[in-house]
Length: 422
Image (cartoon, rainbow, N blue to C red; front, side):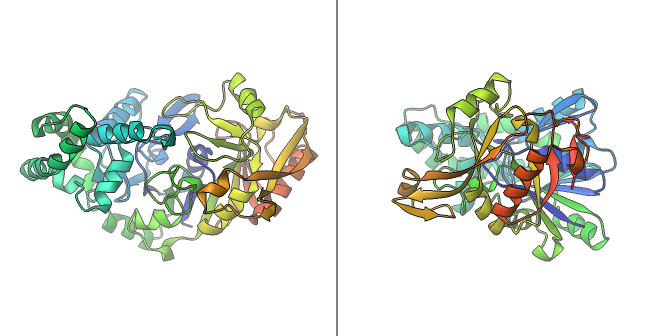
């Protein structure tokens, strides 16, 4: 059974743990979009791994991992990730990881362009990680991007970078920022390209063959549906399709290869960066931060926290075609006496069951809440549905009812074994 795992919120939903858990029965793990602006945290055998570009399947032996064409690739960042994994005893070779030669390359000037744009936007900044992801996707859409296949030939890479730097340096000069020479870019990037060379190939035939051979494939999504360039809270989002459809366009496998879609959400809501978040709550944020929870895996930034928002989840379930819900960090609510669930928004006196497209409407969106009793009991030792307190079961059942998809997995702690199959 081939499965897409995607986030249903603004990322950070714990997808890495769910992917890692399901990888045990998978043959292949594929990543199809995003860049190293996101991170998956996986805890296995008492060791913490923070992955950015490498699929979570790398932590297992005898699993094939693919980084697809839809990913934007920072070669220097990826090599640093290799080193971090190898220091922890994880083998990273071409037998375990292949990288699409059609993936676009994040170059040093993309990061500078990203930072310059954020400064120029002032109070309207997007809140990016300044990793160069947006400018790289912009180059891709503008058909002036540079792909890994181009970088494999040094003379071709040099020529293409030289052409691109004409416009890039003009923009950087306008913002009074240092400009780049071709030699600077090449010196920084080419050693990493050489390290990656054995991994780079046309990944479509081997991935297609794995499907035809009946191998079990997991498609690992990065970020979350509310950051999708089409369906998210525009313009405060990422530059790729983070919803289920992006797994196909970003890997080269067709929709007919997909058997199910697992949507991952927390038992509450978090967001990093700018943009609307109707259920944001300062008390909930302080509650999690005081416990050392809810800090970004990539940036360390404290996440904004709030009550569960099923208006957003309802839409995300639809656009992803979610067949199963995985609800993570249920244990994060263990100490709460009462819980709020946002079931709709009120905007200008009208009830809205789905998020608005009009950006001005977000400023007026007031959550309509239902209150449920908390369970005030430790759920971290639960290993089955029946082990959960009755009020925790009621909370999950109400979540499922409101968003229109069944709860099939429950995360009640960071370890692999702290995953309940419903």
